[in-house]
Image (cartoon, rainbow, N blue to C red; front, top):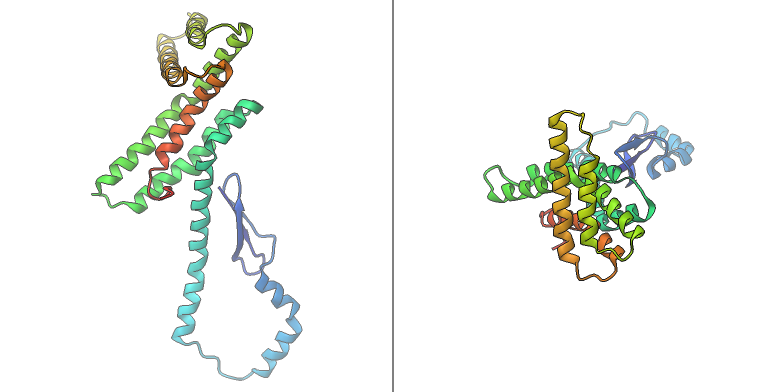
Length: 253
């Protein structure tokens, strides 16, 4: 997201910076207002020399003023787009950071959704005409990402359990560890809860188990077990990055 720094005197934006969330501050002073303050005595003298003269505003003055006002939104939009691209390009690194530091995947999911996916939906509406077939494909891309969000947190927990099993038994095959985790979690589901809740838990468990097995097959030639599980965890983030990078406003082409 973006932090917008406004001049406390004229209220105009004098710079932006990457920030968590959208923030507007009014503490600093832009260069124009600084010069005005420093040259206050000189400005006062100049104004007195022109006192009594008729001040006329030409059409060119008005046009120039309007153009200057338009520059701020355009600059802000450009800054916002670059921020979205930064989030997109850093997805793999952020996923690796979560693995190494034990950070919250839910926080990362929320940041991706608010700072990238929701913005992508807005850009799709701005970029494509309603009858454009490419709009449907673009919307499908964002839908895919949001479906991925639906199981990412549970998938992280599942893979954590797989890693624990491998650490306890280093000689265990990764696929065997995946299967054992599935059986363990099934056995741990309480029997005294609503049937609908049980069915939802089992459905989610099947989803993450199927994803784990699918991505295990992709990277099964990786000899080191922990490196293999790392690739399996990062895979959905790489898929999100790959999918969103096809959108015209995020494409590097």
